[in-house]
Image (cartoon, rainbow, N blue to C red; front, side, top):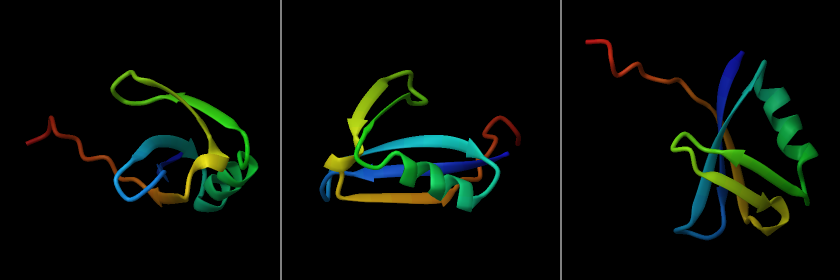
Length: 73
């Protein structure tokens, strides 16, 4: 599984970010496309619950994310 960062931009200053785990960039894009014009809900890494309507966002970006293990030195 790969991890992808999905960022929903509402305007130039406001956005919400979520992380998804799928096999490929194509599957990530298909998931986001299947969620068009509907509500999605998720809890972010800080434990904050989000619910948003994808039709209300202006831009959605998807990129593969490579976590850095900050505990290793």
